[in-house]
Length: 220
Image (cartoon, rainbow, N blue to C red; front, side, top):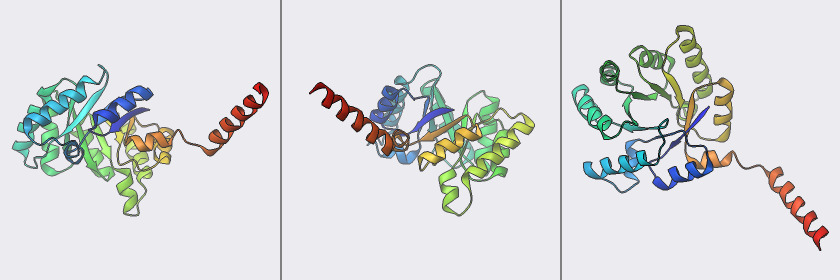
């Protein structure tokens, strides 16, 4: 399973790279706004900086802010021209589905975001989305099982041999990542703090402390 980092922070992307787990990056307007970039040129330059940190097999999802079909197409085409690694991120709406179909016909890669149901995931695959991003944490928030949603989508995609890749989003805790790996989806996109939490276990800390204590006693 691949690890995408859900951030627009160059520092966090470099942290993921140094940790050795970086497979891609996903951004959204909220994350971009945290990086103190506002003008179109600044946003363009920031995406270029992100892409410069990635390798050939890695990509970055850049989300449109338009909600109208024509404007989505215009904005998405501009985003796709920034760098070959850019994947145009489109919301799951009526106009969004039409835009994804347009981009699919143009061989422009897309990430269908804000997906909360199997029906939405089916539509995304039917129109040729490169990725579908079910928001499992937010699904949990409304008393449904986000991981069950992932299983349903994977089963349906397998039934019909859809090429759309499942990219689990809204990752809240390490068990989300572990369970997604058991289900066998393509990737998760997670904040770095959740990825770091996979490292932590109290018995590891206790064991390391004991090893070092025993070693120091022997040396002394």
